[in-house]
Amino acid sequence: MKITVEAKVAAPIETVWRAWITPAAIMQWNAASDDWHTTSASVDLQVGGAFSSRMEAKDGSMGFDFAGTYTKIVEHELIECQFGDRSLQVEFITTTDGVLVRETFDAENVFPAEQQRAGWQAILNRFASYVAAELAHNN
Image (tube, rainbow, N blue to C red; front, side):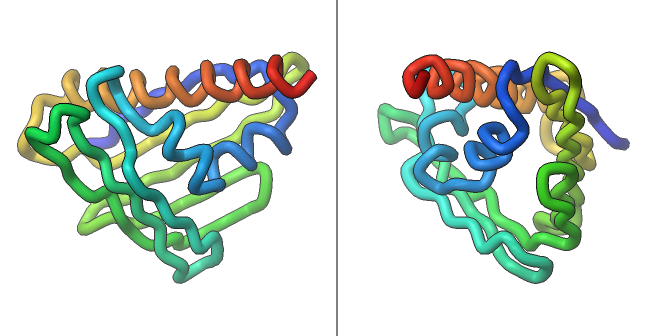
């Protein structure tokens, strides 16, 4: 089963793209809630290149690695990757007032689809908020 989440980001595509692929930025936005954080991230943005991020509960009670390999990249438009036996497609759709970021991914079998959708949507919403705050700070 595929799950899709999306968020509108009120920023130029160059700003959105940079925030998505820069490890230091990823560490700022990549969490579903305030009690989690990303402690490390790496990006080798090329077909066959690897990505990873370490997500941990701030209380140290649990954590996991999210890692995979890039399979297709179209700058400012599309990133596709594999993680385990699952795939992820991230579309960057430029609109008149920003960028629509749409993620479509294979559901996993451990957690209910709605829980997965909610978690991925929460991270994407944090991404949109992070980019908006960075844009406001830099203007």
